[in-house]
Image (cartoon, rainbow, N blue to C red; front, side, top):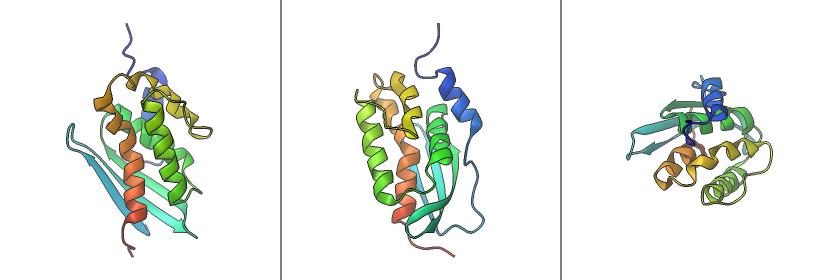
Length: 141
């Protein structure tokens, strides 16, 4: 029997760890923490004209959070804050039973097993919240 929370595509995404690490000279840094489980994500952003030019995520977290971070690491370059906020709204809606976000973020459909576990929704949203925190943070450097 397989666990619907930890499907093979999610395990692959977490293992791929796209965007994992830290940027040497970020313009902004933000983090998000889930006190219920201890997961923490730190995001470094390089910005150009208000859009993500470079992104690195450090996730000390469960597989769900790591997989979500990997999706962002692979596909968030070029997005601005409003687009990231829209993605968060789309993923939150999906976790409540709505449709998955459109490509390139349609990989979030693999989190469909999380819909019945509201306590795990925060795990999926945590990396997106860290990116938003980075956009909202002060300039560095």
